[in-house]
Length: 190
Image (cartoon, rainbow, N blue to C red):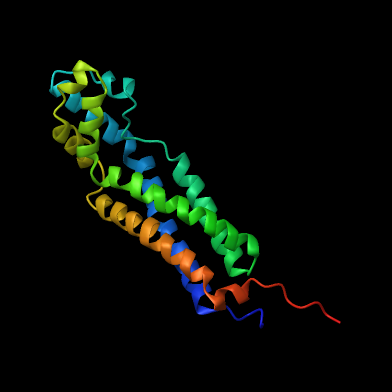
C-alpha cells in the first residue's frame, strides 16, 4: 500500500477525532476565562437567597470546575488521531479503547453540563444538607450561567454529539476493511 494513501474511513475517523477535540478545548478555555466569575456569581446568588455561599464549596459545587479530565481527553484524542493518521496500530487500539470511554462519558457527564439545574437540584435534594434543600437551584444556575458565554450550551451540545455518535463512528470507521489495511505492516523487503 502506498504510504501516502490513506483510506477514506481513516481520514473520516481522524476528522471526527479532531472535531471532538474542539469543544473540549473551548470548554477548557471557557472555564479558565469565566469559571471564577461564574463561581462568584453563584456565591452572590446564594447570599441573595439568605444562604451561606460556602455551602457550595462545602458540597463540592464549583462552577469554576476542574478541567484536568478535559485536558487528558484532548491529549489522548490528539495522540490517537496522529497515530491513526500515521497508520500505527497503537492509534487504532487507543481509539478503540478511548472512544467507548468517551461514549459513556458523553452519556453520563455531558448531559449534566446541558441540564445543570435539574441535576444540581437532584443532588441538593439527596445531599441531606438542610441549607441546600432551600436553594432556588434555577436561580443559582442562571446566575452562574450569566457569567458564562451565551454560546456555551451549543458547545456542550456539540460535545455530546461528538462524544457519543462521533465515538461510535470512529470505532466503526476504523473497523472497516479498508481501514484495517492501513494498519498492516508493510511486507519485508527482500
